[in-house]
Length: 140
Image (tube, one colour):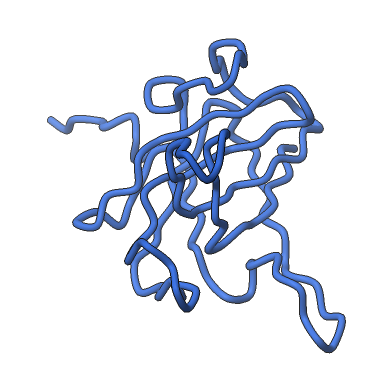
C-alpha cells in the first residue's frame, strides 16, 4: 500500500541564475519556466544565494510574490530555514484587493519575485518591495 502526497504531484521550479530576469549588460534575457499544472507548482530555492544590496536594512528575503497581469498579486512568506515552497491556493494570500487565488489559467504569463517587503514608515508611505530575484512562468 502506498500513500500519495498531493504536493509531490506539482512540478518543481528551481530558482537559479539562468531564469533570473535581471538586466544584463550583454542584453541576454533569462530563461522562462513552462508549467502545465494549473493547480500550482513548487519553488525550490536550495543552493541559490540571494545578493543583498549594499546598505540594505535587511539580511535576507522575507516574501515570495506572484504577479498575474496588472490586477492580481499574491504572496507567501519566505523563511530562512526552508528551501521548498508550494505556490497554490492553499498557500498564496491575495494582496492589495486581489481576488482569492483559485489556480492558474492556460495562457497566463506570471512573474515570481522573491525579495524583502518593508512595511510603510515615516520615510515611505507605502510598503517598499526590494526584488532580489524574479522569474517568468508560462502556464500552458
